[in-house]
Length: 251
Image 1 (cartoon, rainbow, N blue to C red):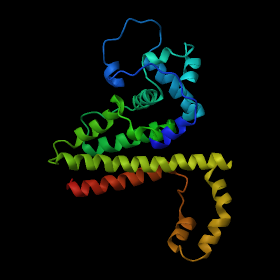
Image 2 (cartoon, rainbow, N blue to C red; image 1 turned 135 degrees about the vertical axis):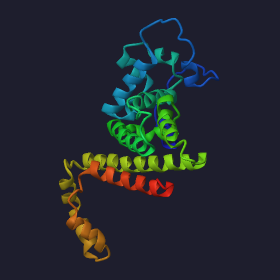
Image 3 (cartoon, rainbow, N blue to C red; image 1 turned 180 degrees about the horizontal axis):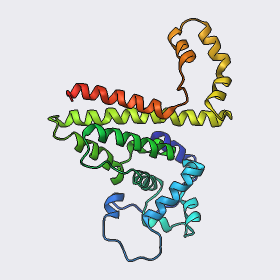
């Protein structure tokens, strides 16, 4: 959040209407006002997400959004007070793409499916990892709700249930963050594949391995055959986490 506010401080402040005390989702839950245009929160979110997906989060401004929507610059302020609330709409829109597992599945199936589907959503919208940790939206909150509901009834106290959910989510966020960082590095360096990246990094890696201080890592470099199979890596790590949780729960 601090990083985002620093980024926003580097641009010219945009006009906004006075805030009322009710927060975004409370306001949007009220009966819809008489329509004055075709503009809706859903259209606003979809347009903003499209900008972020193609040009990055920094390209999303209220002025740019109005241009893409073909509306007056102040039109979106009927629904959001500024960029912070716009980001909430965007995150909620993205998490709306995530289909929740059915209620008939066991806790492990639910946790696994949620993790895989969250990975897919975040890789499709990598900018979300910069914003979603401290947002709180209906579609986003539905994910831990489904995970907690799957654990409910296992004779766990509430703190333990949340610790389990956060453990799996922390793995997902960390693993996906690595994938996104890897992709950004490849793009920045002009490398089109993992092989090109390894070739580019070969001089320093050769020196480091030559010191003899990393024999097990050297073995990995020489023997590993799935260095670029990120999906396999993700699922193997995920299953390891779930195996540990199952062992602890005696399941």
